[in-house]
Image 1: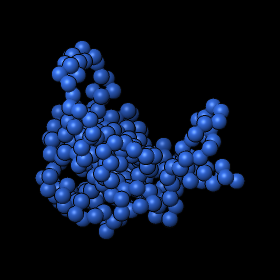
Image 2: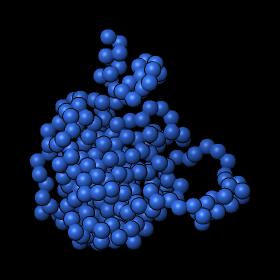
Image 3: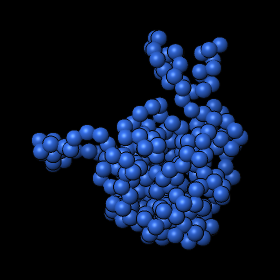
Image 4: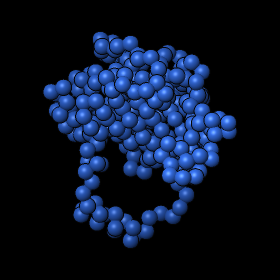
Length: 264
């Protein structure tokens, strides 16, 4: 899309809009940074380059829930890098302030790439059609025209999301096993109180955004994704196996299915 570079520039210029108003909900144990640490931090900022960080161009705000637990819902602040026409990647925080906690990551791919994935891989991904068309996924601060262009690129994409710090459960440290997250696919699934609180803080109206996006072309969701709708739960469990990435006998975090195979 020819307008994509301009869109990225616009997004970068406007990343500050709608930010600095959602602080993390939990405290991190530990002493405040010393003067020495602050001095080192300032020096590093002036001297070292950060190409992967500087490549982040877009801020998106939406909602996730745990695969297998639709009541385990939370707001997720995405900071997105556009790698190419078919792949984006996002770091996810529990707020949009300087001290926000890094909750996890999301990989976003086009419909074209998603169709090429094996059936078992597709089960790890969720569709974005409803999130976009409903107005639940927003780009705070973007002008309406830029928002429309961006969302036209996202509406038919698919995401794979892992949360590594479960701050919604009042955990002050990133404890436990990473969790596979899913996205909402229909009305009545997202807690209205979460949505209302988001709209208030970011000064947006989801229903107005929804009306603005009704003419976006949303193709039918590809079969094999959003498997939670069919009662299939995928989460990690500890098993004694090297796993697909292992080199010998190790402790491996596998899926529920792999755990059962190990027992057999």
